[in-house]
Image (cartoon, rainbow over all chains, first blue to last red; front, side, top):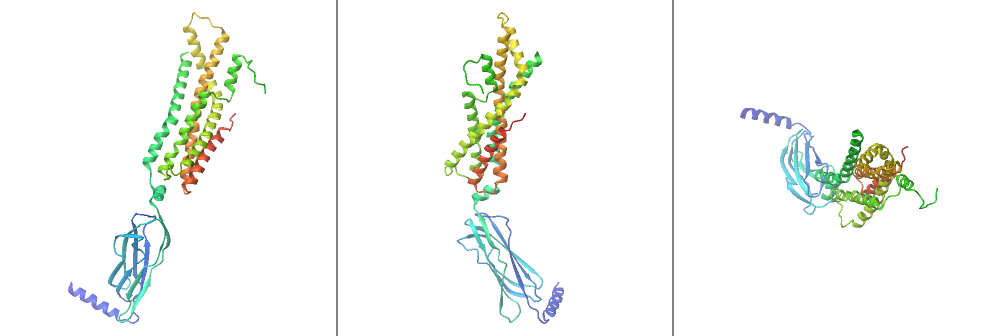
Length: 184
Length: 185
């Protein structure tokens, strides 16, 4: 096992010593929810792709768009570090937040900083900007998307006397006079 | 059109009752009671599904219910008028059989043919009146409720709740009343 690892490291070093081996990180930010609702979990996914030839080191992702006044952080961290991202590989990070207020919200870019090459200054990159999204209030969400099975069931129950009682009376009368005809 | 006169025979009065659109006070009351119940039922849906508070929209709901009550009651009246003749024709034999059996039981009394025919006509009118009223209520209520659900939860689902209520209630009751005015010969 140690011999195998040694050979792999040697090969990597040999390749790494090539010219123009710089890392280049692409950061993609995605909202995983179809509908964003006040006081409901909102999942955000960050994908970092190293499309360069070199290893990216001291990679740091930060997203400061989720202020405490607007969002509550439920799971994950808005600031994450990776020691290295190899060339041609990618990493994913996800957080879960809850919007505290309904209304339109502008989801801005996240920032990534990394060292693309040894001895070079830190490189900064920005993710895509998701833009303005509507955060529905709980009331509006329930109005549009809840199933309301109980409400429909009760409504059907209360409609029944208005329709069934006159129908029953009609059929009783109809049966009475049909029987009289048959009897005669 | 013949001027109103109180010199109609009993038979003519019965015929007028039979063919006339006018409702008795009792029939009107029954119709308006049914209409107000069926117009108030959607308030539950708008309160629980569209999240419209009853107290906040009390005036709108009151006006909507009253307008709908009037239109649905008109639909009842028109439908009842159209159905009454069909029902009377179908019950003719049954009513005649009922009157004949009643008269056969009271054998001692000799009843003239004219009186027997009058009784049959009166009874036929009574039965047709009751059955046509019941059928009119069933038909109009069904049409109103189906239209209301289609308008409110399919066609105008994305509109604001207040606009949704106005369009659905007026639309459903208006179309129900309009459909009742179509004559099928």
